[in-house]
Length: 355
Image (spheres, helix red, strand yellow):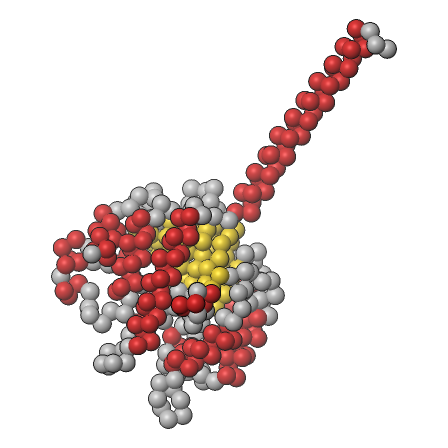
């Protein structure tokens, strides 16, 4: 059958095949796009740190509650209470407890974990205890927990090989990172000649922050989330003429330099910057995000929270509190200027830091 009728039938068949192939290709493209968007939307959990009594029991409960959620990872702020011993036994117990978590777990060091530790002679044992924590909790390039999350640690840089507690990782278009900023004024000591640990860590943190924002810009991240125990108080940084006054920022403010650096870097970053810390909340207050331009702040206190992240939504971050009966959605506190622009206050603070 080689006549005109046969050629017409072959032409119709080829057309049908091309239409079908085009429809399948469009369906595959649409499906791939939907899958990519689904992969980028995720949640993470944060376990606060204000436990003094019964720390281990409450930590275990918080880990169990977080494990029940479909979180990409969880961040644990601190491993022990203020009144607990700074012993290897306690450290090892918490390492095993957090290591048993079903989801990837990243530990942020708290002041009570190391800064207040003393040896049998009553002398400060802070640096030795911090180094012991680094061995137990930050010795590998991955998270704790049954499910491992690859991490890039600052210790991979030869110059800063001691600072393994500072790590970064990405989920979708969001860059996450930890920063060792203990709540007790960043372990700033007023005694003369005793601030070497603080000063060395300040240099390491300065390098780390510059590195993080460089990576975020290179990878075109939509947001950076920084976890620490201490509150930088970035949204209350004096600006304008007040910033020029000597009394605006006390000389013994252990967070001052890091705060100015974060403000300067955030002012130049096109995406969102969210600071998450374990600072205590006011009585009756619940964790909520407060925004100033593209810079957000979230204090967790002793609560356990879930944060939903959706790059495709109008609100990038949404906070909900974890409870025994399940998570209840709680709208975040949005600043009126939360449109991605940088207000004058942040811009001026950035200029001050650059001087």
